Length: 142
Image 1 (cartoon, rainbow, N blue to C red):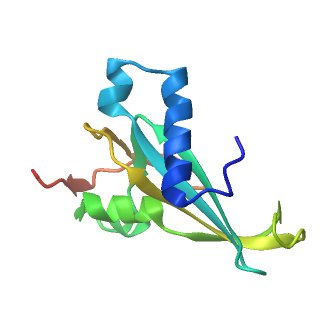
Image 2: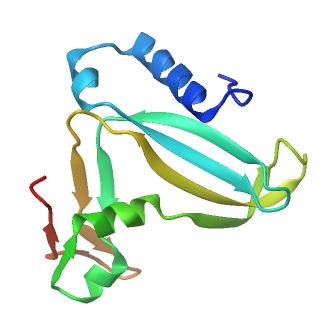
């Protein structure tokens, strides 16, 4: 679906409507949220947006919590999830400048579901092995 000519809220609404036509159920009404994926061309500054629906968020426990076996706040896991990253020599072709460019990419939660389901990635993978993390994750009651 090509929606680049619309504003961010209009794009979000069009994608939400598209997904609603494909799956309209009590489960999607309760658990479905919307992520916004933003890609910015580092050459010309052009932004491309994509919206994806989700039923749960898979959050990794940040590396700083792996090093120390204490505790971490769920907000730190969410911050890691939405952290932007630069993609260098990735082969991305910008729609605006028509060149293969480096980009900055980030993800944000555009619409929260009524009920947010979070899956914590409790395993840390290193080059040699995989181990279960025993880090306590603090989740506020409200």
